[in-house]
Image 1 (cartoon, rainbow, N blue to C red):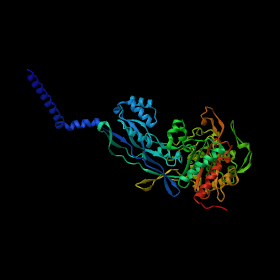
Image 2 (image 1 turned 135 degrees about the horizontal axis):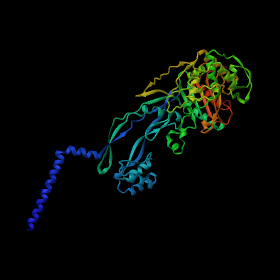
Image 3 (image 1 turned 45 degrees about the vertical axis):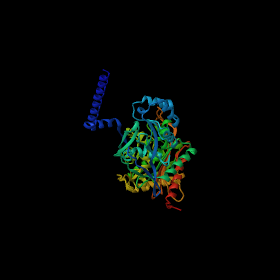
Image 4 (image 1 turned 90 degrees about the vertical axis):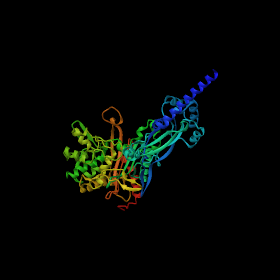
Length: 566
């Protein structure tokens, strides 16, 4: 009986074994490919990877230098599903990477179903070595591309930055993001032996386009340093400088103080300093003040309503209904020519000039000079004003607009307007991207830049001579550079309460102060626009003009431009 039971057990074991073998044969031989594919679904995933971002170059006089590129940085991540002793792993990682253990443990436990969980970016070589020595299951090191700006803060407002998601923000990085970003691809990632992750094949990714900018590194650096140095002397809160080649629209420098270091953009965001990312040269409007008188004068000269020698008698004020317009310091100038109106920056003289034109003709010229439209610079986030208050048609609005009060523009718009005067009446399109690099070959970027004639060359020449008189004999004498004729105009305007975020009508005691000019005046190589936000000085002739003179002298020396006069 005992042997019968044993034989029965052997027989049952044999049947069970045969069934198992048959099942295995069925799975492997009959449906092997099916189950292999199903298994892979649990062992492999496809991760989207970004294409390598294109580089950005600046000029260093006659050669180009790298201003934005990519570098490989290491990061640590975990696979929560593969971590056994979560508390122990969190403790070891926290010690190795100098992160908070409790926060890390909570993060791992909360996201236990996730395949990947980032622990720390930008880990050092020493930290990476510690992680490798620990040899923990479910803990991994990998590399990612990170944006690097070799010159740090230089031209940061032009360049912008790339956020942690790989998206361009502000400046060139924001405006040209789709071009720079490249083509996305895929990477296969598999579970290896013992649950470890292994990288597989990659496919489809492609590097973005490299861009060459018009910005000259040395002029840009000089402009930024001048702003920084004079901020201490004049006590302004912020300031901007633009340098443009008037014949082409090529932007040679665009500086904004205070700037930021795009390599550390997260720190500014964490400290609620996001406003530093804003480039006020294109992302903030202001009332240009007396620099706008050049536009008013251009309109009347071009219409033949005045000449540089036309005279009028200044009584010190103009009354329009219940509004009284006066000159700076309530000065009374008596008889003055149109050239002297600019030299002495006479507000009532600008009103006289505007009155020689119909409201419609004056408005038409403002439109020609780009007052009501963006400059369309190829940078992210340009703002502008449609100047709806001016367009209401009130008499006093036309009067105050004649000397740049009650009109809102950004500094790039004003620089563009002065380029038309310097460029013999031709209106240009400012731009920052000059060329692309394709397989190491520089290919010019074709820009639609029609250079519309908005005033005659004769008008531009007459106005240039009048603006030279401003620097030779008038309030603009601080802009003079020995050996050269400089044409330009100062500007000072009160800042309205609304621009300061104060819900109140009227104007504060704070001011915008500016100087815009070009040199050499009879064959201009550059236009420089300087704007300072609320310096301690009273007028642009006491502040912004000196930044202009300093930078103009530098550029004339830098390009070794021959003097015009002894």
